[in-house]
Length: 460
Ligand code: ARG
Image 1 (cartoon, rainbow, N blue to C red):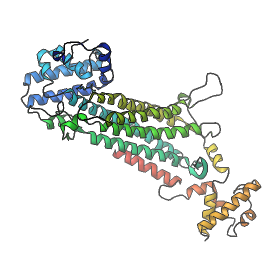
Image 2 (image 1 turned 60 degrees about the vertical axis):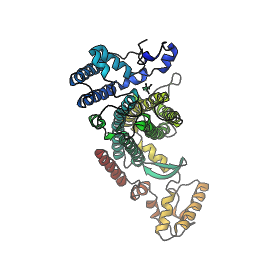
Image 3 (image 1 turned 30 degrees about the vertical axis):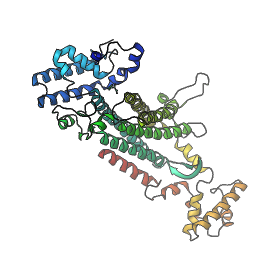
Image 4 (image 1 turned 180 degrees about the horizontal axis):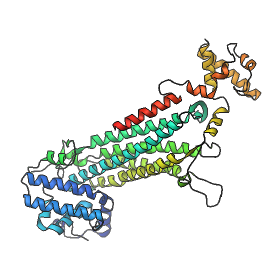
Protein backbone atom coordinates (compact mmCIF):
# COMPACT_ATOMS: atom_id res chain seq x y z
CA UNK A 1 0.00 0.00 0.00
CA UNK A 2 1.31 3.49 -0.89
CA UNK A 3 1.99 5.96 1.85
CA UNK A 4 -1.11 8.03 2.53
CA UNK A 5 -1.17 11.79 2.09
CA UNK A 6 -2.19 12.00 5.72
CA UNK A 7 0.40 9.48 7.07
CA UNK A 8 1.83 12.01 9.59
CA UNK A 9 -1.36 12.17 11.64
CA UNK A 10 -1.96 8.41 11.80
CA UNK A 11 -0.17 5.61 13.59
CA UNK A 12 -1.81 2.69 11.76
CA UNK A 13 -2.34 1.80 8.12
CA UNK A 14 -5.85 1.72 6.71
CA UNK A 15 -7.49 -1.71 6.82
CA UNK A 16 -7.17 -3.41 3.43
CA UNK A 17 -10.92 -3.68 2.76
CA UNK A 18 -11.49 -0.16 4.01
CA UNK A 19 -8.74 0.97 1.65
CA UNK A 20 -10.48 -0.64 -1.34
CA UNK A 21 -13.79 0.76 -0.22
CA UNK A 22 -12.32 4.25 0.02
CA UNK A 23 -10.50 4.23 -3.32
CA UNK A 24 -11.97 5.80 -6.44
CA UNK A 25 -9.04 5.48 -8.83
CA UNK A 26 -10.64 2.79 -11.00
CA UNK A 27 -13.37 5.27 -11.87
CA UNK A 28 -11.60 8.61 -11.71
CA UNK A 29 -8.56 7.54 -13.73
CA UNK A 30 -10.56 8.56 -16.79
CA UNK A 31 -10.13 12.17 -15.64
CA UNK A 32 -6.32 12.10 -15.85
CA UNK A 33 -6.14 14.58 -18.74
CA UNK A 34 -8.44 17.04 -17.02
CA UNK A 35 -6.58 16.60 -13.71
CA UNK A 36 -3.25 17.38 -15.36
CA UNK A 37 -4.62 20.37 -17.30
CA UNK A 38 -6.02 21.77 -14.05
CA UNK A 39 -2.69 21.26 -12.28
CA UNK A 40 -0.79 22.98 -15.09
CA UNK A 41 -3.08 26.03 -14.86
CA UNK A 42 -2.73 26.02 -11.07
CA UNK A 43 1.09 25.79 -11.24
CA UNK A 44 1.31 28.62 -13.79
CA UNK A 45 -0.86 30.80 -11.55
CA UNK A 46 1.25 29.93 -8.47
CA UNK A 47 4.28 31.19 -10.37
CA UNK A 48 2.61 34.38 -11.70
CA UNK A 49 1.49 35.29 -8.20
CA UNK A 50 4.93 34.58 -6.72
CA UNK A 51 3.69 31.70 -4.56
CA UNK A 52 6.21 29.30 -6.14
CA UNK A 53 9.31 30.26 -8.09
CA UNK A 54 9.20 30.29 -11.90
CA UNK A 55 11.88 27.57 -12.00
CA UNK A 56 9.82 25.30 -9.74
CA UNK A 57 6.67 25.99 -11.74
CA UNK A 58 8.54 25.12 -14.97
CA UNK A 59 9.71 21.84 -13.48
CA UNK A 60 6.18 21.06 -12.31
CA UNK A 61 4.63 21.88 -15.68
CA UNK A 62 7.11 19.90 -17.74
CA UNK A 63 6.80 16.99 -15.30
CA UNK A 64 3.01 17.10 -15.66
CA UNK A 65 3.28 17.23 -19.45
CA UNK A 66 5.51 14.17 -19.50
CA UNK A 67 3.02 12.28 -17.30
CA UNK A 68 0.20 13.32 -19.67
CA UNK A 69 2.13 12.06 -22.70
CA UNK A 70 3.07 8.80 -20.99
CA UNK A 71 -0.48 8.10 -19.87
CA UNK A 72 -1.76 8.90 -23.37
CA UNK A 73 0.74 6.53 -24.97
CA UNK A 74 0.11 3.80 -22.40
CA UNK A 75 3.71 3.93 -21.11
CA UNK A 76 2.35 4.92 -17.70
CA UNK A 77 -0.74 3.34 -16.17
CA UNK A 78 -2.65 4.54 -13.12
CA UNK A 79 -1.52 2.69 -10.00
CA UNK A 80 -4.63 1.19 -8.41
CA UNK A 81 -2.88 1.14 -5.05
CA UNK A 82 -3.37 4.92 -4.95
CA UNK A 83 -6.62 6.26 -3.57
CA UNK A 84 -7.53 8.40 -6.55
CA UNK A 85 -6.15 9.91 -9.75
CA UNK A 86 -5.19 13.15 -7.98
CA UNK A 87 -3.01 11.32 -5.47
CA UNK A 88 -1.46 9.17 -8.19
CA UNK A 89 -0.48 12.08 -10.43
CA UNK A 90 0.97 14.14 -7.58
CA UNK A 91 2.96 11.15 -6.35
CA UNK A 92 4.24 10.38 -9.87
CA UNK A 93 5.19 14.04 -10.33
CA UNK A 94 7.28 14.08 -7.17
CA UNK A 95 8.87 10.78 -8.20
CA UNK A 96 9.86 12.39 -11.51
CA UNK A 97 10.94 15.91 -10.47
CA UNK A 98 11.68 15.63 -6.75
CA UNK A 99 10.98 18.32 -4.12
CA UNK A 100 9.35 20.84 -6.50
CA UNK A 101 6.52 18.34 -7.02
CA UNK A 102 5.57 18.73 -3.37
CA UNK A 103 4.80 22.43 -3.96
CA UNK A 104 2.01 21.81 -6.52
CA UNK A 105 -0.69 21.31 -3.91
CA UNK A 106 -0.04 24.76 -2.32
CA UNK A 107 -3.33 26.68 -1.98
CA UNK A 108 -5.31 23.70 -3.27
CA UNK A 109 -7.28 20.79 -1.84
CA UNK A 110 -8.47 17.59 -3.46
CA UNK A 111 -11.92 19.00 -2.82
CA UNK A 112 -11.58 21.87 -5.29
CA UNK A 113 -9.39 19.68 -7.49
CA UNK A 114 -12.03 16.99 -7.94
CA UNK A 115 -14.79 19.58 -8.35
CA UNK A 116 -12.71 21.07 -11.17
CA UNK A 117 -11.84 17.74 -12.79
CA UNK A 118 -15.41 16.55 -12.95
CA UNK A 119 -16.58 19.82 -14.50
CA UNK A 120 -13.85 19.68 -17.14
CA UNK A 121 -14.62 16.02 -17.85
CA UNK A 122 -18.36 16.48 -18.12
CA UNK A 123 -17.87 19.51 -20.36
CA UNK A 124 -16.00 17.25 -22.81
CA UNK A 125 -18.50 14.42 -22.41
CA UNK A 126 -21.46 16.74 -23.03
CA UNK A 127 -19.93 18.03 -26.23
CA UNK A 128 -19.35 14.44 -27.44
CA UNK A 129 -23.01 13.61 -26.85
CA UNK A 130 -24.05 16.80 -28.64
CA UNK A 131 -22.00 15.75 -31.71
CA UNK A 132 -23.57 12.29 -31.68
CA UNK A 133 -27.03 13.82 -31.40
CA UNK A 134 -26.29 16.10 -34.34
CA UNK A 135 -25.43 13.05 -36.48
CA UNK A 136 -28.64 11.33 -35.42
CA UNK A 137 -30.74 14.40 -36.20
CA UNK A 138 -29.15 14.78 -39.59
CA UNK A 139 -29.95 11.12 -40.40
CA UNK A 140 -33.56 11.74 -39.32
CA UNK A 141 -33.74 14.80 -41.61
CA UNK A 142 -32.36 12.82 -44.55
CA UNK A 143 -34.86 10.00 -43.98
CA UNK A 144 -37.71 12.49 -43.58
CA UNK A 145 -36.85 14.26 -46.83
CA UNK A 146 -36.57 10.94 -48.67
CA UNK A 147 -39.91 9.74 -47.25
CA UNK A 148 -41.77 13.04 -47.12
CA UNK A 149 -44.57 11.58 -49.26
CA UNK A 150 -44.77 8.07 -47.80
CA UNK A 151 -48.15 7.59 -46.17
CA UNK A 152 -48.54 5.64 -42.94
CA UNK A 153 -51.23 5.41 -40.29
CA UNK A 154 -50.84 7.96 -37.50
CA UNK A 155 -51.96 6.56 -34.15
CA UNK A 156 -53.52 7.77 -30.94
CA UNK A 157 -54.16 5.18 -28.19
CA UNK A 158 -52.33 2.82 -30.61
CA UNK A 159 -55.50 2.99 -32.78
CA UNK A 160 -55.34 4.21 -36.37
CA UNK A 161 -56.21 7.88 -36.13
CA UNK A 162 -55.35 9.93 -39.22
CA UNK A 163 -53.05 9.34 -42.18
CA UNK A 164 -49.65 10.96 -41.77
CA UNK A 165 -46.38 10.92 -43.65
CA UNK A 166 -43.46 8.82 -42.46
CA UNK A 167 -41.25 11.90 -42.73
CA UNK A 168 -43.55 13.73 -40.34
CA UNK A 169 -43.27 10.95 -37.75
CA UNK A 170 -39.47 11.01 -37.95
CA UNK A 171 -39.26 14.81 -37.78
CA UNK A 172 -41.13 14.66 -34.47
CA UNK A 173 -38.13 12.76 -33.09
CA UNK A 174 -35.69 15.19 -34.72
CA UNK A 175 -37.28 18.04 -32.73
CA UNK A 176 -37.09 16.01 -29.49
CA UNK A 177 -33.37 15.40 -30.00
CA UNK A 178 -32.85 19.04 -30.89
CA UNK A 179 -34.32 20.02 -27.51
CA UNK A 180 -32.01 17.45 -25.89
CA UNK A 181 -29.04 19.30 -27.37
CA UNK A 182 -30.47 22.53 -25.96
CA UNK A 183 -30.76 21.00 -22.50
CA UNK A 184 -27.21 19.61 -22.57
CA UNK A 185 -25.82 22.95 -23.76
CA UNK A 186 -27.78 24.86 -21.10
CA UNK A 187 -26.50 22.59 -18.34
CA UNK A 188 -22.94 22.83 -19.67
CA UNK A 189 -23.17 26.63 -19.74
CA UNK A 190 -24.38 26.82 -16.14
CA UNK A 191 -21.65 24.38 -15.08
CA UNK A 192 -18.95 26.52 -16.68
CA UNK A 193 -17.69 28.26 -13.52
CA UNK A 194 -14.36 27.33 -12.01
CA UNK A 195 -14.19 25.92 -8.46
CA UNK A 196 -10.37 25.88 -8.40
CA UNK A 197 -9.11 28.07 -5.57
CA UNK A 198 -12.02 27.24 -3.30
CA UNK A 199 -9.47 25.21 -1.35
CA UNK A 200 -10.82 22.62 1.05
CA UNK A 201 -13.90 24.78 1.68
CA UNK A 202 -13.03 28.28 2.90
CA UNK A 203 -10.67 29.68 0.27
CA UNK A 204 -6.97 30.22 0.98
CA UNK A 205 -4.58 32.58 2.73
CA UNK A 206 -2.28 32.60 -0.33
CA UNK A 207 -2.60 35.49 -2.81
CA UNK A 208 -3.97 33.28 -5.63
CA UNK A 209 -5.59 34.61 -8.81
CA UNK A 210 -8.77 32.64 -9.38
CA UNK A 211 -9.63 34.66 -12.46
CA UNK A 212 -6.40 33.60 -14.15
CA UNK A 213 -7.02 29.88 -13.63
CA UNK A 214 -10.68 30.20 -14.60
CA UNK A 215 -9.68 31.91 -17.86
CA UNK A 216 -6.84 29.49 -18.59
CA UNK A 217 -9.20 26.53 -18.28
CA UNK A 218 -11.91 27.99 -20.49
CA UNK A 219 -14.39 28.88 -17.74
CA UNK A 220 -16.59 31.97 -17.87
CA UNK A 221 -15.63 32.97 -14.30
CA UNK A 222 -14.54 31.52 -10.95
CA UNK A 223 -17.47 30.35 -8.80
CA UNK A 224 -18.46 33.07 -6.37
CA UNK A 225 -18.65 31.05 -3.14
CA UNK A 226 -15.95 28.58 -2.13
CA UNK A 227 -18.32 26.39 -0.08
CA UNK A 228 -20.63 26.12 -3.06
CA UNK A 229 -17.65 25.54 -5.34
CA UNK A 230 -16.52 22.37 -3.57
CA UNK A 231 -19.92 20.95 -2.68
CA UNK A 232 -22.08 21.70 -5.71
CA UNK A 233 -22.94 18.69 -7.84
CA UNK A 234 -26.21 19.97 -9.24
CA UNK A 235 -24.58 20.11 -12.68
CA UNK A 236 -24.22 16.30 -12.49
CA UNK A 237 -27.93 16.03 -11.79
CA UNK A 238 -28.84 18.41 -14.62
CA UNK A 239 -26.71 16.53 -17.11
CA UNK A 240 -27.97 13.15 -15.88
CA UNK A 241 -31.51 14.44 -16.32
CA UNK A 242 -30.79 15.69 -19.85
CA UNK A 243 -29.29 12.25 -20.61
CA UNK A 244 -32.37 10.52 -19.18
CA UNK A 245 -34.46 12.48 -21.64
CA UNK A 246 -32.15 11.53 -24.53
CA UNK A 247 -32.66 7.89 -23.54
CA UNK A 248 -36.40 8.40 -23.12
CA UNK A 249 -36.61 9.75 -26.66
CA UNK A 250 -34.40 6.98 -28.02
CA UNK A 251 -36.49 4.47 -26.11
CA UNK A 252 -39.77 5.70 -27.56
CA UNK A 253 -38.28 5.58 -31.05
CA UNK A 254 -36.91 2.09 -30.30
CA UNK A 255 -40.35 0.93 -29.25
CA UNK A 256 -41.71 2.07 -32.61
CA UNK A 257 -38.87 0.39 -34.48
CA UNK A 258 -39.62 -2.85 -32.64
CA UNK A 259 -43.30 -2.63 -33.59
CA UNK A 260 -42.59 -1.56 -37.14
CA UNK A 261 -40.34 -4.51 -37.86
CA UNK A 262 -42.77 -7.06 -36.44
CA UNK A 263 -44.51 -9.22 -39.06
CA UNK A 264 -47.81 -7.70 -38.02
CA UNK A 265 -46.58 -4.28 -39.22
CA UNK A 266 -43.65 -4.88 -41.56
CA UNK A 267 -43.22 -1.14 -42.08
CA UNK A 268 -39.45 -1.39 -41.97
CA UNK A 269 -36.69 -3.98 -42.07
CA UNK A 270 -33.49 -3.51 -40.12
CA UNK A 271 -30.19 -4.20 -41.79
CA UNK A 272 -28.60 -7.54 -40.89
CA UNK A 273 -25.71 -5.63 -39.30
CA UNK A 274 -28.12 -4.31 -36.66
CA UNK A 275 -30.27 -7.40 -36.10
CA UNK A 276 -29.74 -10.71 -34.37
CA UNK A 277 -31.05 -14.23 -34.92
CA UNK A 278 -32.43 -16.84 -32.59
CA UNK A 279 -30.59 -19.89 -31.26
CA UNK A 280 -33.59 -22.10 -31.99
CA UNK A 281 -36.09 -20.39 -34.31
CA UNK A 282 -34.52 -20.19 -37.77
CA UNK A 283 -36.97 -17.61 -39.11
CA UNK A 284 -36.23 -14.99 -36.44
CA UNK A 285 -34.67 -11.59 -37.03
CA UNK A 286 -34.70 -9.68 -33.78
CA UNK A 287 -34.37 -5.93 -33.16
CA UNK A 288 -31.99 -6.41 -30.19
CA UNK A 289 -30.33 -3.00 -30.56
CA UNK A 290 -33.64 -1.19 -30.20
CA UNK A 291 -34.68 -3.44 -27.30
CA UNK A 292 -31.38 -2.85 -25.49
CA UNK A 293 -31.78 0.87 -25.92
CA UNK A 294 -35.26 0.68 -24.41
CA UNK A 295 -33.89 -1.49 -21.61
CA UNK A 296 -30.83 0.63 -20.83
CA UNK A 297 -33.06 3.66 -20.33
CA UNK A 298 -33.84 2.15 -16.93
CA UNK A 299 -30.17 2.33 -15.91
CA UNK A 300 -29.84 5.90 -16.98
CA UNK A 301 -32.97 6.88 -15.07
CA UNK A 302 -31.57 4.98 -12.08
CA UNK A 303 -28.38 7.03 -12.23
CA UNK A 304 -30.40 10.23 -12.00
CA UNK A 305 -32.13 8.99 -8.85
CA UNK A 306 -28.77 7.84 -7.44
CA UNK A 307 -27.39 11.36 -7.79
CA UNK A 308 -30.43 13.10 -6.35
CA UNK A 309 -30.53 10.73 -3.40
CA UNK A 310 -26.78 10.96 -2.78
CA UNK A 311 -27.01 14.75 -2.55
CA UNK A 312 -30.21 15.36 -0.70
CA UNK A 313 -28.98 14.93 2.87
CA UNK A 314 -25.46 16.33 2.57
CA UNK A 315 -24.48 19.21 4.83
CA UNK A 316 -21.90 21.64 3.46
CA UNK A 317 -19.21 21.34 2.35
CA UNK A 318 -17.43 18.26 0.89
CA UNK A 319 -18.52 14.82 2.08
CA UNK A 320 -17.12 11.55 0.81
CA UNK A 321 -20.61 10.56 -0.35
CA UNK A 322 -19.89 12.83 -3.29
CA UNK A 323 -17.32 10.41 -4.64
CA UNK A 324 -20.35 8.36 -5.76
CA UNK A 325 -21.22 11.07 -8.32
CA UNK A 326 -18.76 9.76 -10.86
CA UNK A 327 -19.97 6.18 -11.21
CA UNK A 328 -23.53 7.38 -11.83
CA UNK A 329 -22.89 10.28 -14.17
CA UNK A 330 -20.15 8.50 -16.14
CA UNK A 331 -22.40 5.48 -16.61
CA UNK A 332 -25.15 7.74 -17.99
CA UNK A 333 -22.72 9.31 -20.46
CA UNK A 334 -21.24 5.95 -21.49
CA UNK A 335 -24.65 4.38 -21.97
CA UNK A 336 -26.03 7.27 -24.02
CA UNK A 337 -22.91 7.44 -26.19
CA UNK A 338 -23.08 3.69 -26.88
CA UNK A 339 -26.80 3.85 -27.63
CA UNK A 340 -26.35 6.74 -30.07
CA UNK A 341 -23.37 5.10 -31.73
CA UNK A 342 -25.51 2.05 -32.52
CA UNK A 343 -28.92 3.64 -33.13
CA UNK A 344 -27.85 6.25 -35.69
CA UNK A 345 -26.44 3.78 -38.25
CA UNK A 346 -29.25 1.33 -37.44
CA UNK A 347 -31.74 4.01 -38.58
CA UNK A 348 -29.63 5.12 -41.52
CA UNK A 349 -29.50 1.57 -42.92
CA UNK A 350 -33.08 0.38 -42.30
CA UNK A 351 -35.26 -0.39 -45.33
CA UNK A 352 -38.62 1.34 -45.54
CA UNK A 353 -41.57 -0.71 -46.84
CA UNK A 354 -43.69 2.19 -48.05
CA UNK A 355 -46.26 -0.12 -49.69
CA UNK A 356 -46.98 -1.82 -46.37
CA UNK A 357 -47.25 1.51 -44.57
CA UNK A 358 -49.72 2.76 -47.14
CA UNK A 359 -51.71 -0.48 -47.14
CA UNK A 360 -52.04 -0.27 -43.35
CA UNK A 361 -53.33 3.29 -43.67
CA UNK A 362 -55.82 2.31 -46.39
CA UNK A 363 -57.60 -0.32 -44.33
CA UNK A 364 -60.40 1.04 -42.19
CA UNK A 365 -61.65 4.49 -41.53
CA UNK A 366 -58.48 6.49 -41.00
CA UNK A 367 -59.85 9.22 -43.30
CA UNK A 368 -63.08 9.70 -41.32
CA UNK A 369 -61.92 13.13 -40.05
CA UNK A 370 -61.39 14.24 -43.65
CA UNK A 371 -64.90 13.04 -44.46
CA UNK A 372 -66.29 15.19 -41.62
CA UNK A 373 -64.11 18.14 -42.73
CA UNK A 374 -65.65 17.70 -46.22
CA UNK A 375 -69.18 18.18 -44.85
CA UNK A 376 -67.97 21.10 -42.73
CA UNK A 377 -66.54 22.80 -45.81
CA UNK A 378 -69.98 22.33 -47.43
CA UNK A 379 -71.51 24.38 -44.60
CA UNK A 380 -72.49 21.86 -41.91
CA UNK A 381 -71.27 22.75 -38.40
CA UNK A 382 -68.33 20.45 -37.52
CA UNK A 383 -70.14 18.82 -34.58
CA UNK A 384 -73.07 17.82 -36.86
CA UNK A 385 -70.68 16.65 -39.57
CA UNK A 386 -68.83 14.55 -36.97
CA UNK A 387 -72.13 12.90 -35.93
CA UNK A 388 -73.22 12.18 -39.52
CA UNK A 389 -69.87 10.56 -40.36
CA UNK A 390 -69.93 8.59 -37.09
CA UNK A 391 -73.28 7.10 -38.08
CA UNK A 392 -72.02 6.47 -41.63
CA UNK A 393 -68.94 4.62 -40.27
CA UNK A 394 -71.09 2.47 -37.96
CA UNK A 395 -73.37 1.63 -40.90
CA UNK A 396 -70.48 0.78 -43.25
CA UNK A 397 -68.88 -1.45 -40.62
CA UNK A 398 -72.13 -3.41 -40.34
CA UNK A 399 -72.21 -3.64 -44.14
CA UNK A 400 -68.56 -4.73 -44.37
CA UNK A 401 -67.60 -1.68 -46.44
CA UNK A 402 -65.06 1.13 -46.11
CA UNK A 403 -65.33 4.83 -46.96
CA UNK A 404 -63.56 4.07 -50.25
CA UNK A 405 -65.77 1.14 -51.27
CA UNK A 406 -69.08 2.73 -50.19
CA UNK A 407 -71.25 4.00 -53.04
CA UNK A 408 -72.64 7.51 -53.08
CA UNK A 409 -76.12 6.33 -52.05
CA UNK A 410 -74.58 4.88 -48.85
CA UNK A 411 -73.16 8.33 -48.12
CA UNK A 412 -76.41 10.15 -48.89
CA UNK A 413 -78.26 8.09 -46.26
CA UNK A 414 -76.49 10.30 -43.69
CA UNK A 415 -76.27 13.70 -45.40
CA UNK A 416 -77.47 15.02 -48.74
CA UNK A 417 -74.43 17.30 -48.85
CA UNK A 418 -72.34 14.30 -50.01
CA UNK A 419 -71.37 14.36 -53.69
CA UNK A 420 -69.00 12.47 -56.02
CA UNK A 421 -66.17 14.80 -54.98
CA UNK A 422 -66.17 13.14 -51.53
CA UNK A 423 -63.94 10.38 -52.99
CA UNK A 424 -61.25 12.92 -53.72
CA UNK A 425 -61.61 14.41 -50.25
CA UNK A 426 -60.99 11.04 -48.60
CA UNK A 427 -58.17 10.01 -50.92
CA UNK A 428 -55.14 9.38 -48.66
CA UNK A 429 -52.73 11.41 -50.78
CA UNK A 430 -55.14 14.34 -50.65
CA UNK A 431 -55.66 13.89 -46.90
CA UNK A 432 -51.96 14.40 -46.18
CA UNK A 433 -51.28 16.92 -48.95
CA UNK A 434 -53.98 19.23 -47.59
CA UNK A 435 -52.56 19.32 -44.06
CA UNK A 436 -50.43 22.34 -44.80
CA UNK A 437 -51.05 24.05 -41.46
CA UNK A 438 -47.79 25.08 -39.76
CA UNK A 439 -46.17 21.93 -38.38
CA UNK A 440 -48.66 19.66 -40.17
CA UNK A 441 -48.08 16.34 -41.94
CA UNK A 442 -48.08 17.43 -45.61
CA UNK A 443 -44.96 16.57 -47.61
CA UNK A 444 -44.43 20.30 -48.12
CA UNK A 445 -44.58 20.93 -44.37
CA UNK A 446 -42.27 17.97 -43.64
CA UNK A 447 -39.66 19.35 -46.07
CA UNK A 448 -39.91 22.73 -44.36
CA UNK A 449 -39.41 21.10 -40.96
CA UNK A 450 -36.32 19.25 -42.18
CA UNK A 451 -34.89 22.47 -43.62
CA UNK A 452 -35.64 24.30 -40.36
CA UNK A 453 -33.91 21.64 -38.27
CA UNK A 454 -30.90 21.55 -40.57
CA UNK A 455 -30.46 25.31 -40.31
CA UNK A 456 -30.81 25.21 -36.51
CA UNK A 457 -28.20 22.45 -36.36
CA UNK A 458 -25.75 24.72 -38.16
CA UNK A 459 -26.26 27.44 -35.54
CA UNK A 460 -25.53 25.11 -32.61
N1 ARG B 1 -11.85 10.78 -4.65
C1 ARG B 1 -12.48 11.92 -4.08
C2 ARG B 1 -13.80 12.19 -4.80
O1 ARG B 1 -13.96 11.74 -5.87
C3 ARG B 1 -11.59 13.13 -4.22
C4 ARG B 1 -11.76 14.14 -3.14
C5 ARG B 1 -11.31 13.59 -1.87
N2 ARG B 1 -11.31 14.57 -0.84
C6 ARG B 1 -11.28 14.25 0.45
N3 ARG B 1 -11.25 15.18 1.27
N4 ARG B 1 -11.31 12.99 0.82
O2 ARG B 1 -14.69 12.83 -4.29
